[in-house]
Image 1 (cartoon, one colour):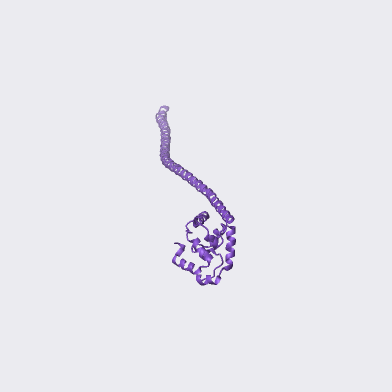
Image 2 (tube, rainbow, N blue to C red):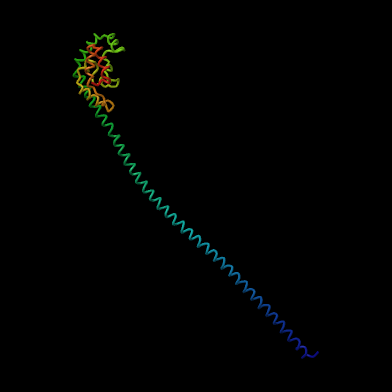
Length: 236
């Protein structure tokens, strides 16, 4: 084979091989570029999805923030209302405490007035009480029991219609311990003693008490029993 013939078939072969090599690398390069583009597109989509999610989260946070602001505002208003109520409660408590503090002072004043009346009555009527004690020596217990229907103790003030044990104690403290002394005491004075004793004694009306005590002192038991039957509660 001649040299010229060899180049005739060798040159086309070399050209084909070179073309194949160039085509291979060209195709491979395009494939790499395409793959890279797809990756970037996927990454872009992923980032866009994350951005959308972050936007949704931001909107949710804004809504929650607005709701929290409203709650804070409401709590602040409630707190202010509670402060106002607390201030009013403190003022009411102070007012009540002031009234309580003043109450003992009023009671002390009444007690002092009552004690003064007791002392004055006891000093002024010592002689009369002695006379009354002498008169009790003539007390007829049987006659009293027959008329009144029960045994009567001498100078028991509760025999008077309208006088109970507490009022009797009140009068004893004021120096009025006998029927005679009660019969000689002006109803105005008796009312003063009752008023000084406190609200529960102020409702009583002692107008007939001296008269009833006088009957008891004189031993007029039948008259006293009849009078009390006709005047319930000791009211004339």
